[in-house]
Image 1 (cartoon, rainbow, N blue to C red):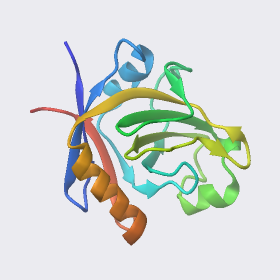
Image 2: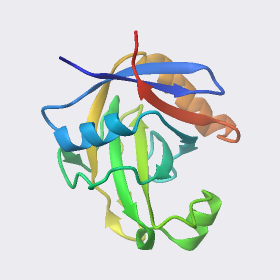
Image 3: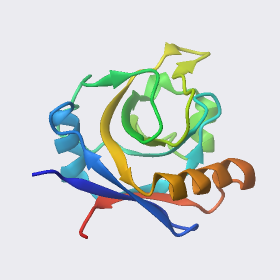
Image 4: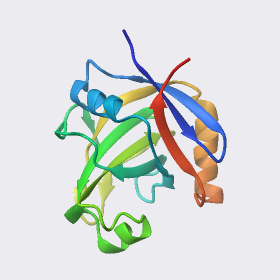
Length: 164
């Protein structure tokens, strides 16, 4: 039976629904599902292009490892990244207020085309595609683009089990 997430930009009041890709990324799906809800400050990517994400403390008892990886996410992809403390530079960690954490989980949605997960400091940054947006991508894409144009200050991104 399929499982679904509701992903919400809370300040903007916009949500979408994503289906978990249990067959393609079973360990990642289960780790995320067991840790829901997850919520944190929303940020728009600087380099990856059409990405809005939040960083939260690590939550899995055991990291899922690589599964269903990509460096070229497409619109509607929901992606899990696990970063150890040494992967992120000091300024970035301070800016995101995660400098005290030994590592973080980055939960991201991609809302447009032509994304490339290449970081100038460390190279390719593959992430696990664990869900795909099946409802509300157009509305969410508009809201995500507004995060880019208007800013993310005060915005939060929430991942929760879909109940409807």
